[in-house]
Image 1 (cartoon, helix red, strand yellow):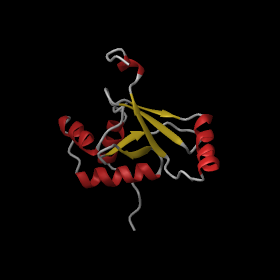
Image 2 (tube, rainbow, N blue to C red; image 1 turned 120 degrees about the horizontal axis):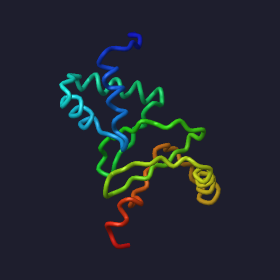
Image 3 (cartoon, rainbow, N blue to C red; image 1 turned 60 degrees about the vertical axis):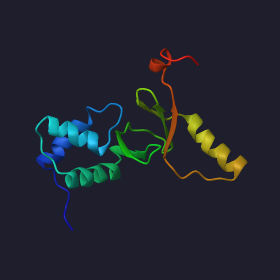
Image 4 (cartoon, helix red, strand yellow; image 1 turned 120 degrees about the vertical axis):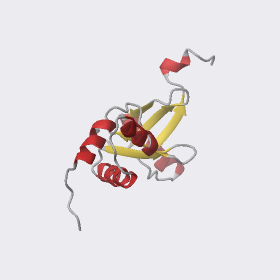
Length: 135
C-alpha cells in the first residue's frame, strides 16, 4: 500500500482549490489549472480530492443533476452541516448552527426518520441576488 506523500501536483491542487470561494467541480478545477499551464492528470485530481475529503478538508456534494461539487470546509463543531446554494450566482454558504441539530432531532422525534446525510443543500436566492428579482 502506498503511503501519502506531498507532490508538486498536490501542492498545486491545494493552492488552487483555495481560489474557489463558491465551490468547484472537477472540470472547473482542471480547467483552472490548465489555464495556468499547470498540468495535472484527472486521476491525480480525483485521488487527491478523495484524500482531502477523508481528511475533511473538502466536502463533496451533488447538485440537482447529480454532478459532484467540492467545497473547502470551514471547521465546525457540529457534524450536521447544511449548505445554502444560490440558484442565480451559485454561491454556496455552509450553515452550522444549533438550529440544524434541532432540526435533525425534530425529524427523528416527530417523523421517525433518521437523516444520515451530512451534505444537505437548500436552494434559493442569496441576499446579493435578491435585488435582481421580484419576490
